[in-house]
Length: 447
Image (cartoon, rainbow, N blue to C red; front, side):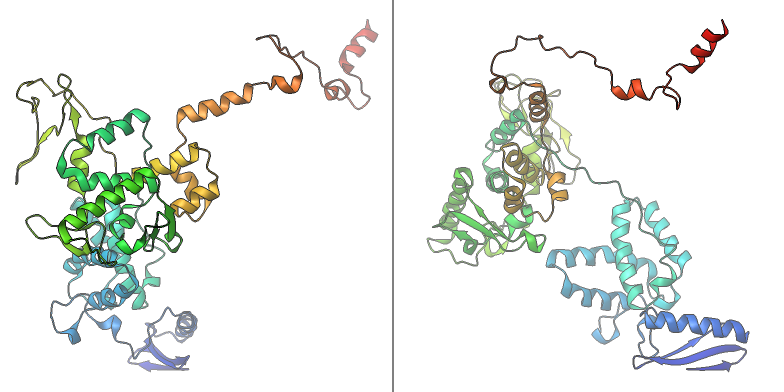
């Protein structure tokens, strides 16, 4: 450790764990320089100071040069961080990094300051971006600054933005569930979305778990499926298939054989990729069934003929328009006031629905958590929606009297509770001499 002057400012040079550090202390005062040096040594020991040999903090934040040896700090961070992420997460992170690259450009990492970060947040707000989106971008920026050992300079002042807590979800009433099952059969093009819906309703599987399902995950002898790739390690589980779930898997198998022949490779995906106007690719998973799901959940029933139909007219490049008349030419009824009771239902809500039905069916918490892949009871309470009728029935049992244990019958309204004063009220209502009304006794003696 050594302290020296360069010009009028003190500098320090020291080594920790074999790494060499050389930093400006930014002051000509010897006493302040020693205090700053002690602080730097303490932070270097905690890994909060970049060693002199690492030039990461001197790199431009973003560099458009395609030469792999001339990457910016953002590109290096994304490349290294990609190894710890799922492919879909890495793709989303790269997408969120575009705004950062455009704003900070070739600014050196060491030149990024707190006001500059606040300007970025303000600019994103003016662009109409939600707090949740800005937070995802800030996490990438924080990752770059942490690697440069500079985030500790701003961590006390720059905080993630407040985001409204996500809604717990939605559990369907019986009438709504029947509506969904009927609506899913209205159009042939919704077939794959309907089969995915049936799997979710009967297995508690997440959308990503269904998309990553392969034929090797189906046990045809034990009639169960294995979830090998889930949201968390605890999500890996085996799920027994009931009749509805087994029928959905059977239908998917028939469709796959019609397209690819009788032999299905174990590594092929159950929900395979099938882009519009292209050949299906069984070696890649489907990306989504969002369009079919949205059309399915907003579909309405004509009040006259009872036909299910999409209430919106969708044209490429134009805003959707509300349909005024029934699609059935023989009917032509006014459908402007018709609404779907399941409009806005998320696909993930089907998982809430399945867990709710398991809980209301009397399954133990351990059983529900084993089937759904939960890791603690807090998440269990987050997902299970015990409906009003179930709660009402449970509370009504509190007022019931077990007549069998009483050895007879009790007429309605014949049970009465007499008021019995507590002994504490008689013994302790008064002074230390146990006199209840000391003042009245004085008054009586006075008269």
